[in-house]
Length: 214
Image 1 (cartoon, rainbow, N blue to C red):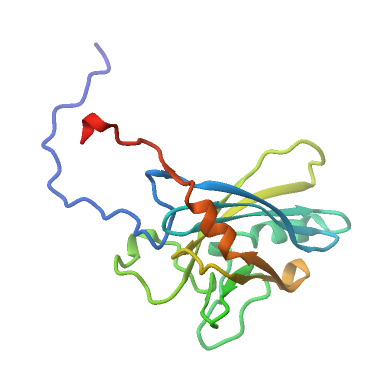
Image 2: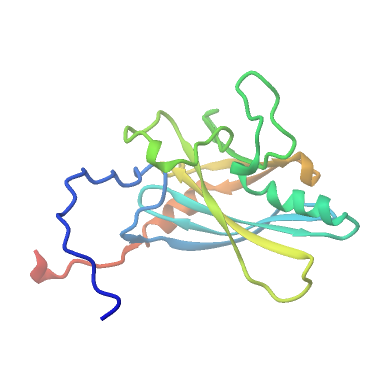
């Protein structure tokens, strides 16, 4: 035999890496209840940002955003730069002592009592996340994924999840987006916290415990 299985190795004694803390992502063992929103957050000749659905969980809610870009009159280089700026880890120059880069796509929420959370300055290295919950609300950006669509090859749809933790209050609150390079000025819509709380009552575990499992 030319190719043989590798020799047996001792099991690693390295400690297991901690899982994602509850405030940074939806629970892995729960199916959120889907609310259809169909909100249009902002629209320009080259960009449309919409909020098609919200998934309500027992611990928070996942705000699902579609970011649609099309080339139109943009040069190939400018269109590529616009597409790449959707990904926050591609943006440099986000500093505490300076203005935000125009390429940075940012989202945020603000509650009636003034409490606010945004995606600005968020760490994408999940291995460095503290396990201790942060004070106040947290809006965590989950890396976007391409959504395959038919039609024009000079158009793209990316779906991005924004995890809002903890669950919002049972009242209306603001959801904001701003993206200068995409021509999106600060745009704010209202979301219904009471509707999200009601939907969360229908969140269900993936593996319901049966009576014999005790």
